[in-house]
Length: 287
Image 1: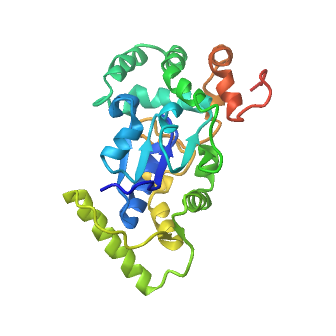
Image 2: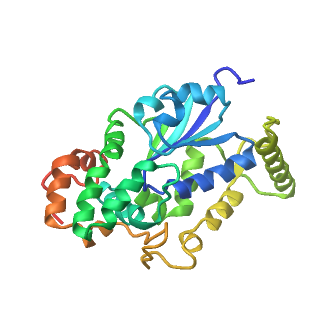
């Protein structure tokens, strides 16, 4: 049974904001802690009712990949993190991903969009991608009243440039970090808790939590396993492979691809989102 007023943990993000990387880290953290973790991708997956979905499935930690604030606002006793990225880098990253690598299995709209990209040159394709990002930037725009004591705003650029410090800070903000010595007895408890978590995954049987916080050393090991170079097959940040989901990992890459005409359109349609998250201060920013 769901406990009344139980705390709900949340990771809220948007397309091409390192959500896959964060999901893999958070899912393993939840396995160790005995927290039921689930990912939802869009409002249609939850019948436009995130709070009901969390309650009915007895979810402890929800990862909402295309987070609309109107849904997040319905969650009570929430503590979480909201990760954003420079919209200009999102456009470029999404263009290359949608051109070749992103799965279309559960995203039928992407099939038509991919065909359009593949039939266009790069400059035209980027114009198509700017238009295709409208729903996502509307979602980012919806977070005008946000953050505070219970939701931490994190920019992806900061998180991925200092991965260890950032993940430690995020888990500590959620109240799930154990900074005491990671001794033998605690290691045994983590192993047992992880076993209980696997039983829960396979059988749906909720077993009692063995630990309330993940040891810092253990968390650092999880982050280490998920470093960019390991995900990218040994490539370092900045070494591009357009056929990889982890294409390049560089911030500010938009300057290499967006033309003056692209930038004029982005300013017209999405400048408020760029300013909202502090990626520019002056509305008439220049490259």
